[in-house]
Structures are given as C-alpha cells and as structure tokens.
Length: 477
Image (tube, rainbow, N blue to C red; front, side, top):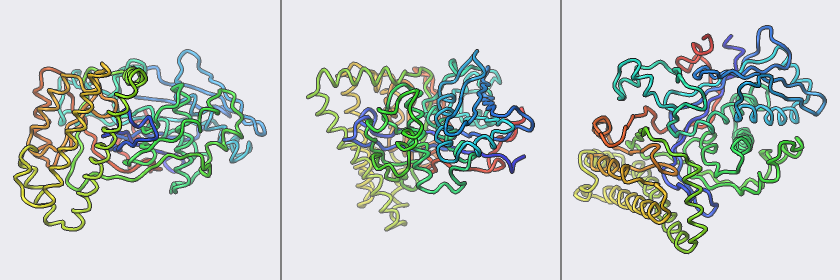
C-alpha cells in the first residue's frame, strides 16, 4: 500500500516580526517555519467509482466530504457529492488545482488517475489545535510532558467550526500540503520538488487560499508553508485580483499561476535562528479573531495616516535591525565558534538585562538584539494604544515581562497580529526553556498551554509514509 501513496507535507508558521506591516510591499516580515506540520495522503481507491474524490479529516467529527471530477477535453466538471457539510478550503483547493492539472497533463491522464476514485486524508500535528480537552479527559496537567504523551494526530472531539486553533497557520499549511499532494499524485511535479516546482505550488496555494478566504491577504503563511523560515516581502495583490472569479478561464488561471510568470514579485530570503537559539511557543486560551484585529488597525491607519505611517516606518526599521542582529550572530558563530559558544553560555545564565556585563564584541551583538527587540515591543504597545486594538493586551504584557525576566531569554513577544492567541519566547538553553515552562505552568492570570513545536526551516516536502510516526495508523482508522 505504501508504494502507491503520495504524501505531501507543509509546516506551520510564526511571524516573529512584521505583524500588520507584511500587508504592504514596502515592509518585510520575519517568518519562522515550525516543526508542526500538515500531511496530505492520496491513494487510489481499490474499487471505487470513477471520478470520485473522498476527502477525510479523521481528527474531526463529521469530516468526510465527497466530490465528483470528470475531465472532458479541456473542461473540468467538478461538483460536491456531499451537501450536508462543506469545507471551503478543501473544495476550492480541489476545484482549481484540478483545473490547473488538466491544463498541464490533459484529460486522459486526469481521468485515468481518477479511474477508481481516490481517497485523500488530511491531518495536522497536535500543536495546530488546543489539546486542553484531551488532557482533561485523561486527567493530565497542561504541560509539555503530558502533551508529548498524546498519540500523534489525536482526535480533537470537535468539528472544524468548533475546534480551538493555536494560531500556527493551519489553513495555509493544509492548503499547501493538499495542493502539493495533488500536483505530485497527478505527476505535474516530481518528488524532489525543485525550485520551479515549489514556485508553482506556492502560486497555486496562494490563489486557492485567498479565494477560500474571500480576499487577497499578505500571503506570508502560505509562503512559509512552501519555503520554511525566511524574510518575506509580499507580492502585488494585483496579480490575483483579476482571477478571483468562480468562473475564471482555466487557461488564464494556469498562465497567471505559472512558475514562469514574472509578475510574481514576492521576495523570499532564507533565514535561520542563530545556533543555540530556540523557539518556544504557547497557546493562550482566549483566541483572537485576526481579521477583526487587522481590520481595526487598518481603519486607524486610514483615519490617521501621518501618525500611522511614522510609527510603521519606525517599526519597519527596527524589525529589520532585529533580523540583522540574528544574521550577524550566525556570522559570528561561523567566524569564531569558540567565542560565540562561550558568549552564548554566559548569556544563557543571566537575565538579558545583565548581558552587558559579558565581555566581547559578540556579547555586544546579543545586547543590541535585546534592545531592538524591546523597542519593537514598545512600538507595538504604542500601536495598541493609538489604534485601540489589543495587539499586546495588558495581560499579555505582564506575562511577556515575566518570561523576558527569566535568565537565558532573548525575546518574548506576541507573534503576528498579536492579541490573546499565543506568545513566543526565544531562549538560549534547555534550562531557560524549563524555567519559562515553569512560569507558564504557574501563571494564574491567563491559561497558558505550551506547544511542542520548534523552529524548522524545511518548507513543503514529499515524504514517505513510514517516515512519519503515527501516519499510517490514522489511515486505517
């Protein structure tokens, strides 16, 4: 069975700097891929109905959808079979990706590969969804050890509309893994996924994701799902606006999304946290609705453009400086590994406010990183006050200050659009990680749940089923 399966995988994301600003091409964002990933598995049915696509999300209740797809010359007849429940992201993804596949491979190949029907299974790592209910049912505390004891891809005991997400970009990771799996299964791209093939996956996933959301967003989450960790500058939304149409001509669509289309002006510059730096994430049990926050901030920016532009320009400058400090530290590690490691060890044992006592030019870079990261936080707090939007709510400020005061913590921030969703800490040692988790576990003002994800710079990949613990078990349920 394993031989005939196609498995594609895409990571979640954390927007470390560049919240709100990534909506505009003038600014960049620093996005970190996560070790939490989505997986899409496609296999032919053994004796199914020709042209039938059965899609399952076994982690959810009431989550099986069926569709019918038949290629007739250069036209795709596509329709849902199940009508009692729908999944906008899956349906949009199948409909448009199959149109693009038909344009590239022809009707005969499409119909042949659908001759027995196909089964599509989509799962996400546990970190994408709050596991509080699961832990309570097992009478376990909400800590890292308890989370690590849960089965992979465990059931959420919720429907797609009621599940509590943790803000890692599940819809973008799902869309990207599904687009990649379809393009792989229908032989439009190869297992090795070269750069040009990833560009195609990126362009198709961006379109599908925007279409399903009903608007052209910044696209950093899909970009991270394809490319992993990087500095992101968005594409011009005018690329997608003309094709955001239910009845778009498939030739026009395919051409617009082609890897050779030079209109795509997004900029992806690879990034990695410096050696010894670790990303820690926590889910706060009071999720924010990102579109609402963004809408309010943009309304403020429109009503007070001078005030907003000045703040955004300063924020853009300091976001870039934070990125440069990270890159400089990586360079120092390569130039003088011994001194770098000594500095890292010394700083990991001190609060960041005391790092200035560590001698040497590398320590100065550590200090500069903290200083500029703190200034970014103060600017986001100012934006919170001016726009009357809880980007860094006061409750989060108290928690972040406590985390930042732990020895060995370089940064503690609200990622992305902020709000009550999540927090991110960047730490220099396992001891700092344990101490931060201790703060989270005993925090009373907000319910803070650790996530197990770490930074991971691998983007979209084709994987072997056996290489993913627990994946084949989910398929046989």
